[in-house]
Every structure is written in structure tokens, then in C-alpha cells.
Image 1 (tube, one colour):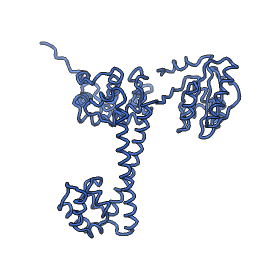
Image 2 (tube, rainbow, N blue to C red):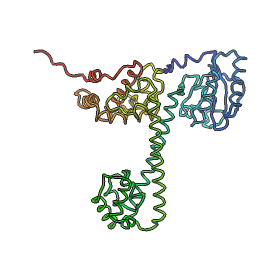
Image 3 (cartoon, rainbow, N blue to C red):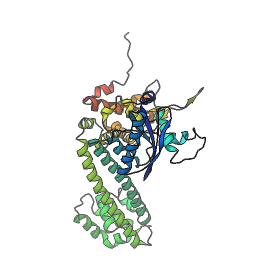
Image 4 (tube, rainbow, N blue to C red):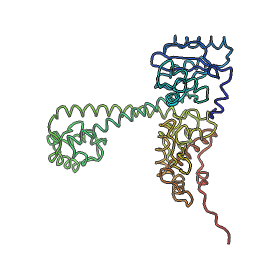
Length: 426
């Protein structure tokens, strides 16, 4: 995997035709240059469809054939999702695809004309010049089982986000119309609480049902964890409720729709997680990741979905950089600023790693001991968050070794990182 700028520059030779493409939702704009920045041909405007992609292939083929280029490299910005189809179809045609940072395009577009204007004719040249200087990255488009797993985990991410919004709206409804409900039921998502919210959500409806009616609801659905004491407490809370008593018909309708959405999303989540588990089990080494005490399905599957084929990396530090957990320094002269993580790369990968550390600290003795060592050692002790970042990077290295070498997790090697003081003989 080529990842240094020198190696990227060396890949641009006098035989390389550089095509900068400004990606749009319906139309794309392309311009062609050589490794010195000399332009060939005229601006190409092509549609975002099969006919347009064929037009691009013919256009680049004519320029390459007439000017003696043997390689073609297409550079573009990752504009939303509009570049997906273009990249996949041109890659199938044998052309190489690279991406440039949109922030770099924005900052460097004034170099040629000292003008901050942004046009569809100007951007392709700016993109091509960034590629010429090696300021690009090669995108990884997952294929096969890795594509399936990433899509499934993206669906889970979306469902979780939508579920959180629904839960917040239900909690808001309860606070307005029946604030005492939360004191009776610690969690409204419990089965007994959901039954009450579905059948008698307002204080008035609870009073109408009475103790026997409430107990009858729970018995009907075979809920055994609650009984007459909970029913009495609910009824007393309903009688003394300060919840708003206006607009209850519409309010009950709103809550009914929210609960329908909640139940539907929970079914979707269950179905999606079953698919995630089925897909992840097909990836070699996944079962070994789960053998690490504290590592669950979400952390392991999320890591594999974001990283993809682990063999494309030659060193775990590349995954560390991809996750945005590599360190950045802010120093100038005598001033030495605080070192923090760069937060560049795939934020979901960073999420799975950092939040996956928390269960490890509570369940895994080795990680807990290493965290204790990092935060209490005499020389350069780490703060709590710094230690969590260090442990996240440690987890990357462990995952990398397990997946690439097909070995099991070894707690003894983990504990070897703790440098214990050597006692000198008397």
C-alpha cells in the first residue's frame, strides 16, 4: 500500500495522463494534463450515466493514444455519494481512481489566477494539479463480504440514530403529559411500562383502569416482574399527576405513532444485527476476535466493516491513521502545545475503537491492568483519556496480528507491555 507522498509522486511519470474531474449530481467536468501541468484537449462535460462514462473513456483514450501516454489516473473530490458510481464504473474500465481532499482544493484554487472563484471549469485543473504533486489518496472500495458487512453496519448506524430520536421524543412526551411515570418505571422501554403507555398512557386513563385493570393488562401479556404494589404506586402517581390535561386526544395519537415507530425500528435492528452476525462469521479471524474478553459483536464487526480487507495494510499504524487516532503536535519555537489525536479518517472506526475500550476496562483484566499502569507510572503518566487512546491503538495492533497471522489472543503478551521495575540483587 503506497502511503507516503514521495511514493505517490513517483507514480506520476511522463507517461501518465492526469485527468481532474469535478463531480456533480448529474454532470461531471474533466480536464487532462501531463506530469508537468501541460493541458491536453478541451474541457469535457459528460453525464452521470453509462453513456457519459463511455464518453469519458473514449476521450481519455484518444488523448492518451495521440500523445503517447500509457497510464491514466483519474482524480476527483469525494463529493457526497455522487462519485460512487463514477469511481466503480471507471475502475472496471481499467482506469485508476484517486481522491483529493476537498479542503485542499478550496485552499489551492487561487494559485493559478489569484482569484477565489469556484467554477466547474476551474476545479478540474486544481484537482489535477494536486494529483500531480502527490497530494491524493487511493480510495478503498470494499468488495464481496466486506461490502456486504459495511452496508449492514451502515444500516445499523442509521437505525440506532433514528431510534435515539424516537426515544427522546417519547421521553419528552412523558415529561409533559405524565412526568410521574418515570418514578414508577425507571425505564419506559421495559415490557410492563410499554404496555401501560400503549393502553392507558395518560393519568386519566390510568385512573379509569384502576388497580385491577392495570394488573389485568400485565396478566394478559404474562408479565410477571410487576404486581399489585407497582399498580398501586402507578395509580397514586396518576391521581397526583401535574401533567398537562389539554390536547390529550392528539397527544395520545402522537404517542401511539411514536411507539409504532419504536417497535418497528427495534424489529429492524434485530433483523439487521442477525444479518451482521451472519456476515461477520464468514470473515476469517472474526471468531478469534470475539475470544478476547470484553470484545462484542458490534466492536468486532464494526472494525471489520470500516477497515475492510486487513491484508491491504502493511502495518497497523496505517489503520491507526485511518481511524484518526494518530497524534498531532502543536509546537512553534519555544512553545510546545498539547498533543492530541488528529481525528482525520473514518470517524465510525474511531467510534468503534474508543467506545469498545470501555467494556474491555470493566471485563478484561489485561486491559484494566495496562490502563492502571499507564495512568500511575512514575515517568510520563497518562491522563485517563490519553490512556484510552493508547489502549485503542493497542487494540488495533492486537486485531491486526490476529487477523493477519491467524493466531489467538495471548493475555501474556498483553501483560508484557507493563514495564515492571527490576529489583537489584543485594
